[in-house]
Image 1 (cartoon, rainbow, N blue to C red):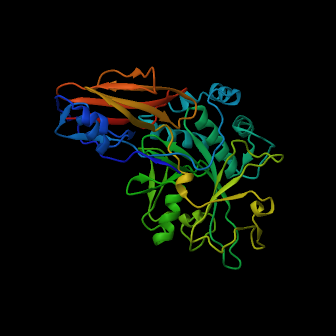
Image 2 (spheres, rainbow, N blue to C red):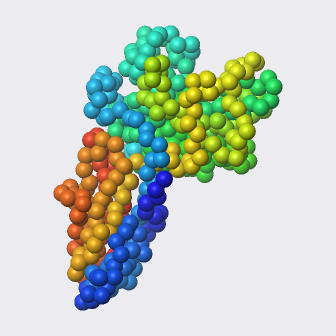
Image 3 (cartoon, helix red, strand yellow):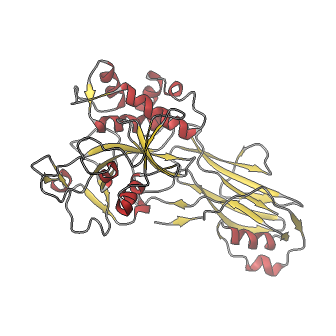
Length: 397
């Protein structure tokens, strides 16, 4: 995994600079590299600018350590899914992206009734069509539906599976399927369960599946809020409510075992997707079972589908973050090169000094011309759905 950039708090657009003569020595000695506050300071001075202050919001960027397959936004399945179920209308009342993602979760929860699968289906359209006829489905079908609807709206999402640690004799499997969606607002992956219309929060911040797991291992999940519904009509319960027949276990206990699926169909018996499974000291020497009172080895062992992942960052890659590199400096100019891990990438956009967004014509060489006073630049990567990844913002003073 390669980490790019830093996380810095953008306090205000306060950048005032005065240009001065840049010596050849400073230009010659400047070392190109990833965008950071320290390198910005050196670049500005090499360009002949006297700095008083640098303010920056540079989201951390992590490239995927495993390659997830996805469905393209213009895939015929997603095009028809958007049209037939008017997904734009489902989220039309959203105040922001996270609100829209919760609205979608709520909508799917209300469209499908939980129960033994009543039809053979292979995608979200078939699931929703069958549900409209009164057919019932299990949790994983809700997850597939959310995942594909999210992709149709331009958000990256993935199906996950989870289960509790059942080392004890009659504690059967509670295998569950849900989803994670990438949130540009929160700049991370977030766990959503459309079957139960819920997500988890800690101190008001929504959590990924891995973060829920960490909270359970830390203190049994006592600081985790179980949140159902959509603001302003959400219901918070702390600690998380007991679910199914977990008896003395908190719901967060279900997150001990995790699988991140490289699949966007219900199943593929001819070419099953790998089970990316994070492993750590807690899973060492332990075995994942399935079944009720009679436990048996998880099917992933039998079919050799488990792919252990030791670095959780390999699974928590950042979507749509601009990976900016300072490639050079000229008098009064900083030269940038832009990359992004943005599926369905459409274009980079830049805003100088708070002006309107404009397309970056040459991402390999973006010139930032510096002037007297405040100098600001904002960068973003957009996909074909018009969804922007997290913004990078820098102001030199």
